[in-house]
Length: 434
Ligand SMILES: C[S@@+](CC[C@H](N)C(=O)[O-])C[C@H]1O[C@@H](n2cnc3c(N)ncnc32)[C@H](O)[C@@H]1O
Image 1: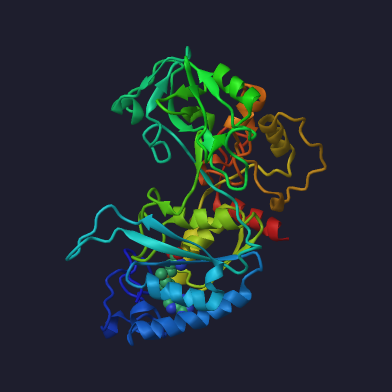
Image 2 (image 1 turned 180 degrees about the vertical axis):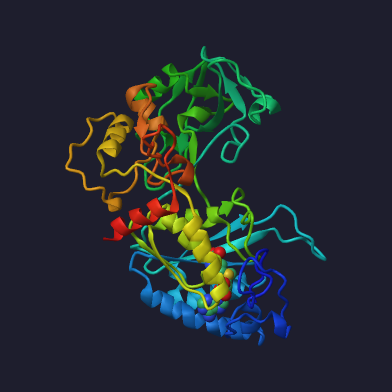
């Protein structure tokens, strides 16, 4: 049964009258109908749920594009059973990953509280899967920056960062940056190592001579090592040399399969609503603008809502008219940011600024399939310094990166950030699908 803040019962005909109780004749909707939802459907227990679910998974597999993905969100009680089902239907070689995400920060339970939910992600064809890496900003004190414990000043002086500096609470001195001491030796397989091998040479640094171990070699050759030293990127330790990696070298990190920052849905319409950010990530990792997304259990319509925001086409289904009413209301009232299309004069100009190349000339067709303009971050790597010295190198951060925050919003004529109202959003969608 679908219970929510707005809907006390599946029999409640409208969000305006909330005094509806199950089991009371007076409370029946004006148009009584059979509404199947969780509590009723699974009265025969987990077995009935699993056989229902397996049937749907077979159909979902048939419907899925050869490069497509399926995501199943499930709690810790049944994750093992549902994963077995997915293995059966999709094959365990099509498991992409099991994502764990923090749904709440505290939970009461007789024993240990359960604060995470899981997303089981399978591909229709693991080899052909459409996948875009997502990145998050790396900043002092946040995820991805845990190992940056040193502080280096513009004159090359280094010291350990204090807890306040590491956590981002205390501002760093002008020009100072956090760093970590990274590997400068590589143990890559299949390459010759030891005396006489390429990139196996003694390095004299600050009065000491260092050699790679018998099992490793330097990550660069002698010229590259000289450039690293000149750029202040080498740290001499007792027995080895390490590479000084600055946090500013690449202020982003790749998303992994443990998400602590997505939370549960805020202002939930009902208890099992998925957090929009979870859906957003799944969608951005596996689809492009113009692709088609299906959610066969619509609920309050979070999938359609997010798909609409990101220019994906969508279909959603539910057995409950209440869920559909709720989703419809949400979609009609939604307001979204507009993003710059690559296939537009304005978008091409912005791309040109980001890539430092002359902008593409028209004609432009405003095709959403060519995607949105995304911000870039520069990436300085050991290899690039070894080849060119310490100059910044522009790296592509990935498509649709940093999800909502970082796709470049189109400025409205008013000079304000262009927020689309629902009508404009729908016109866009109609044009997209035309
Ligand atoms: C967990 S909620 C959906 C959550 C939603 N997908 C989201 O991401 O927020 C489950 C929904 O599935 C619907 N449902 C239950 N059985 C169904 C069935 N056999 N076919 C379609 N929808 C069903 C329920 O009415 C309920 O709205």
